[in-house]
Image (cartoon, rainbow over all chains, first blue to last red):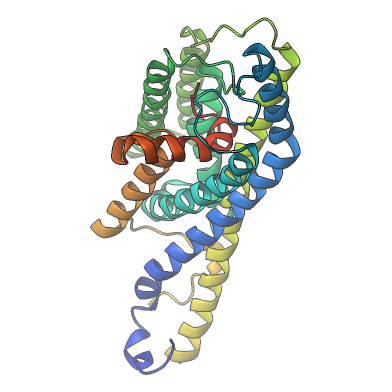
Length: 265
Length: 67
């Protein structure tokens, strides 16, 4: 890769290597996040899904003794478990790619000095907006709880919450920038941001939540275990993605600046 | 060329993202949605329901609404 164009690359190394490398960092970080998420899936979530499906089968008089849940498609439990693992990995890589692009677009807005710090901040924001807040308003449920009559509405609300969350984050950052432009002191800016976040949190907790009626045969601790497992799983995904993305970018920059110095002198 | 800026304290100022990269990110996010929830919006009903079942555990685990 480093062959014939090296002479003309010195000046644009940072720009030229950026996109190929950035996307590779994103994909690798996403895969790492997906892997971490899969570990949690198998340790914390699959056992609960297994318990839920047993109960679901009992409720429905075991009419689908072979396995898959109520839709009646010809997929076995094992296929669902392997499929679930692959799904999480694929979703991880796709989110990692999107993360790399969004990171390139917004990284200068974060005050952290290092790529690791900035990537972790962005990952924490992503976890909050696409996992934590939706989990409060449209909680994750094990199989056998959600009604197919309401799934369309729940999905719409879930997507709206994420969209509003992203817009809210944008508004808070814009507010912060406006405060900088007007020369408001750091303490004032901090207060402004804290107030905006507090208002956001207040809205999240005061708006009526979409709560499905949990069938009485399903124990409360099963639902609780599932929701905790699901949140730990998404937290593992975003945290690992943020750390790996930050570390990889950091290493690339280090390598870039070393080769720049070697060529420049 | 700013050789002095150490990689440790790299403070980016530009935010230029080429259009294709933004499009790629949008496609990736759309694919996540299609995999997790919109299974039958692009595929035949049969394929859609197969994908829906195969992604079942992943969808529930990631907290995406489902029945």
